[in-house]
Image 1: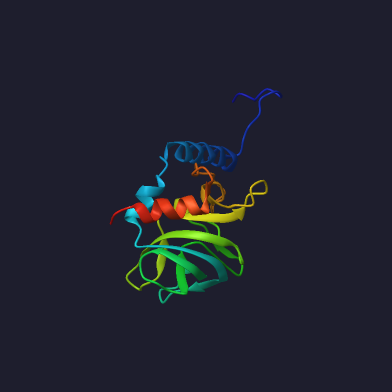
Image 2: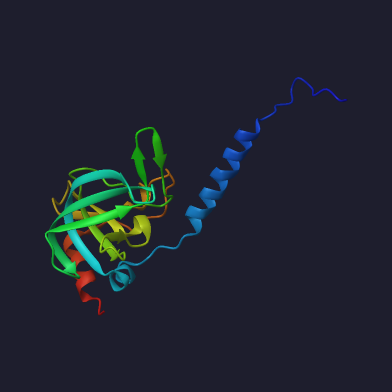
Length: 181
């Protein structure tokens, strides 16, 4: 049996597996094409501007964990008018159990957002194209204009997907409303 030299470094199997997963995720993020705003708007059943009012991790009837996000809607740019929109996600933290869906957007309590969504059979919204369908709304410090930035860089699972370039909120609204169904 051959003894390894003292200069040989062995990596545990878990370290090798982690490296392989990281390289796969990196290549995944670089191969996912951007979805143009107009395409998101065309495919969305609802496009709404609002603020995250609540976040609640729950279990469904089968025991699966999910997160229920409630948005206080300020404007509906496409779809049914509503003042409250329920969005569901497969990611959740319940006690010590954490489930993350790679590519899902991260919502924060009080955050201003624009959501491009579709409805599931229960009538709950699901973010279209995962993180691509959620834009965070902030104020540009130079122009004081409201700016929407795709959440592609902050996603559950910690992998950065390429996001849309920031766009002024008025421009985003115009581009959504110009799209024909």
